[in-house]
Image (cartoon, rainbow, N blue to C red):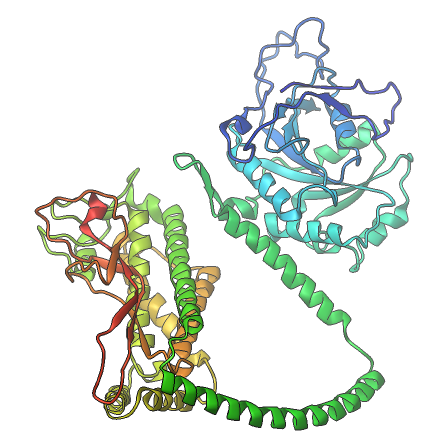
Length: 627
C-alpha cells in the first residue's frame, strides 16, 4: 500500500488538520494474516529518483556513510489530533511510503520510511484513532502488540508519543481507561519513554493546561508520576524535532514483550489473550478502588446513616428469622419428598460437572503457563535447539521421578528411548502432579484438613458403615453434617490451602525443574504463577465442599485420577491424543492423568449399594503420544 501525504505548507507552523491520501486493500482477517506483516521501507533502499526530493541533504562523496540505529516511535491519540500532520512535517518527504499494517477498514498501523534529524535516524508508526465509536481499548492494545510482535522489521520501540488536543475533556472515562491500559501495557520502568504532547494551533500553549495534566486528578497522573513527560506542542518544525530528539534510542524492554511471544509455526501469539485480559482486569480493579475512595462520607453523615442502618437491620433481622424458619420447614419437606421418590436432580449434577470443568481448565492453563515461562527463561542452559527429556540435566533423576523403566513407556521416554519435547513434557507433568495431589490431599480424605491425620481414615470408615446401615438420605445427611462441623461453617481453610500450595511448589514442581535444568539453576516461580496455583487449590476446595457439604439426594461423588501403569479402560478413561496411531503389539496403559474424571456411588437402600457409575472420564496420556 502506498500513501501520499499532502505537501507541508511553507509557513513555519502547520495546522494538524492535514491528512494522508491513501488507498485501502480490504482484508478478511488482518489481525493474523501474512499480508499484515509487510516489511517497512528503510533508508537502505536505493536513492529516490531525480524528481523526488529527499528529506535531508545527501552526504558528501568523500564521507563514508554509516547506518546508525533507527529510533522507532509509536504515535497514539484520538482521530484529528494531528498525527498525520506531525509525520508530514517531521519527515519532510512528499513521496512518503508507508507500510500497510494491522487493521480492518480505516484501523491501520502504518510506519514511515526512516528519516534523519541531525545525525539520528527516526521512523514514526501511525496508529488508529482512539475514539468512542472505534475499537475498544483492549482491542486497540491487542493490535498494538500484534503489530510490534509480528512486523518483519521487528521495530525496537524507543518510545510512545501520545497527542492530546488542547481543550479535550480530561474527565472522559474513556481517556482514563486508555492511560491505565497503556501504563499496564509497557510497565512502570518504561514510562520515562512515554511523552504526552498537548497539541494546539497557537504558537504558545496555555501553561496552565500542562499543570492541570500533572495533577493527581488528571488521567495522565499515573503516567507522569512514574516518569512520563508532558509537553506542549504547537506544530512548529523545530519543536517537533526537539520532542523526537528527546526519545532515547535504547530504552528497557516494555512489559508486553515479556508476556507474549510470536509463534511462527502455529501462526499465533502465545499469551496474547491472557495478557490483554490482565490489562482489562487491572483497569477494573483500579476503577473499583477509586470508586471506593470516592464514597467516603463525613463523620456526621456516617452517624446518621449508621442509626438508620441499625433500625433497618433490626427490622430485617425479624423478617430473616421468620423466613429462616419457613426455609427450614420447606427444606425438611423437600428432603423427605426426595428421599421417598429418590429424585435424580439433573440441575445439581450439572453444577457439579461445571465445577469440575472449571478446575480442569485451570489446571491446563497453569501447566501451559509454567512450561512456557521456564522454557523461555531457562531452555538455553540445555544448549540444544529443540531439547527433549533426553537432554535433561539429570536424566536419571528425571526417570526415577516418573518411575521410568528401560524398554517400557513413561512420560519421560518411549520404549525405544524417544523423548518428549521439553515444553510439552513440563506442561503434562505439572498437570499430572496437580491431579494426583488434589485427589490425595483434598478429595480422598473425608475432609482436606485431615489429610495428614489418622482421624481421616477412621471417619471415612465410619461413614462407610453408616451408608450400609441406614437409608441413602440419612447417610447423606450424616456426611453433610459431619463435614460442615469439621469445616466450622466455612468453605475454606486459608492456612491449609497456602500450605498445600507451598508443598507443591517446593516439592514436586521444584524437583522436576531441578532434574531438567540442573540444581544450580535458580528457578523460582513468579507471583502470578503462584497465584494461579493458589486459585487451582481453592477451586478444588470449592468442588469438595459442594460434593460433601451440599449434595444429598444424588449420592456420593469422587473425582477420578489414574496412576502410572494402569491398563487403559475406555469406560473410565479417554486418551489425550486418541487420533494418533500406536503399535498394535503395545499394551496400552495410562502414563499419567492430566484431567480429572468423576464417578458416582449411590445406594438404593440398606445393604443395597449399586456399582459406581462414571459421570466424566478422566483424560490420560498414553503411549500414543509418541506416535
